[in-house]
Amino acid sequence: MQNARPAKVVAMGESVGPQVYRILRERIIQAELLPGERLSESDAAKSLSVSRQPVREAFIKLSEEGLVQVLPQRGTFVTKISVASVMDVRFVREAIEADIVRVVAGDPAAETVAELRRQLAEQRKVSHDDRTGFLRLDELFHHTLAAAAGKSYAWSVIESVKAQMDRVRFLSVDDLHIGRLIEQHEKIIDGIAAGDKTAAEEAIRLHLREILTSLPEIARSRAELFDDTE
Image (cartoon, rainbow, N blue to C red):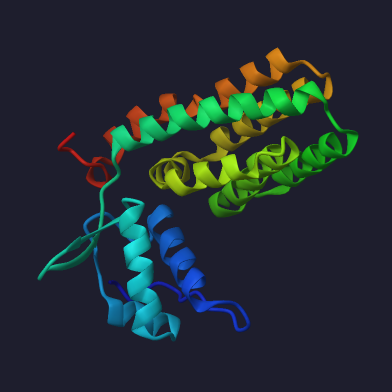
């Protein structure tokens, strides 16, 4: 594992294991740790000032998500992005979130609409070269929709399987793309605020199909990041 990257700090007062997993997961999704890169338990533990045990546990969880591959006698390596996995997760996510926005639009609470519009304003303030900041707000937006529908468990299911999709989303976010995503968020909110379940559903389906346009181009321009055996 390369050592030139700035270390992220494990916070005191919070369980170490989940933090180590979250930090390593973010570094893979944000292409700080590249496909094919060998990960070292000892190097990761040293850089995060933790023991090797939470790093070992994090590697296991990352392997279960398909983000790393553990090869006996060889080591642990960051996996390449699986286009098939991205497409499968996108399909599942659209099915779940389309139902979520129909529930929210069926009985739109004023406080929910106000919170979504507040988040939209925050998204507009983010610098268009701040991919991490925007995607963090995007996650909050979708989580808020699920919570408003009383479907937080459904969102946890999405979170557990969407790692490969997140890797592509991070690579695809640029100046024009962020502006387009914000416009799509606004249409979702407008449909909910109007109590128009059909409009809200159509808006979120369009939003979640955005990756169908960006994925082929990214797979061509960053071919080294993708699994070419599929």
